[in-house]
Image 1 (cartoon, rainbow, N blue to C red):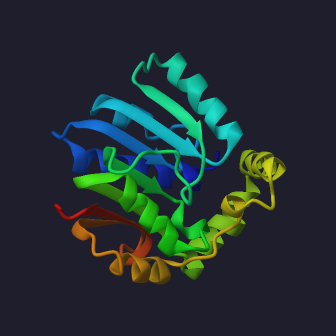
Image 2: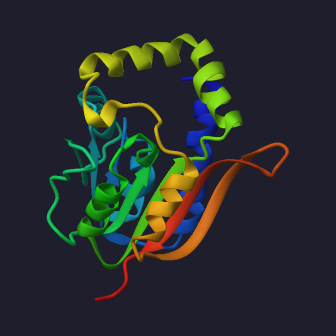
Length: 212
């Protein structure tokens, strides 16, 4: 799309890659997988990978790219974070990037994330800061690029009234507040920053569900 979106996606990818280096997972779940951007990383470190996204267009393209790249241990399903078509405690790695800022009922979303995660599993969640600088980059600068506008039009046509297609309604403070209520253990926190380096634009939490 535009260089701003590419910058965020690449930084997210590299931060996760560095944290997960040397680890291997039996089953990995990518919630809000989009077109499967994280698939190459997850496929290389998992026996099985499932991606879930609310957008049928994104799922269709993710399946196309998986087939094109020869990923034989992946599948992509349409669904949303509030009602995941996944059994309890079935994935030992769950990623959820750039989803929580869209969800009205954050408590329900976190309950679903914990429900599908195995005890001792790793949960990775990421969200934008929603600071004035981020909003300016996301809502103003990025929309100057035709590809970005075209993607927004395609998504809007799918179901503009659907809960999961609403815009950014939660900021980092609100998401962190709900996260603190979950009782999840935080192993690490990483940030994506823009020059000067104290301007935090995106946060990623590496979390664990306590052993039962």
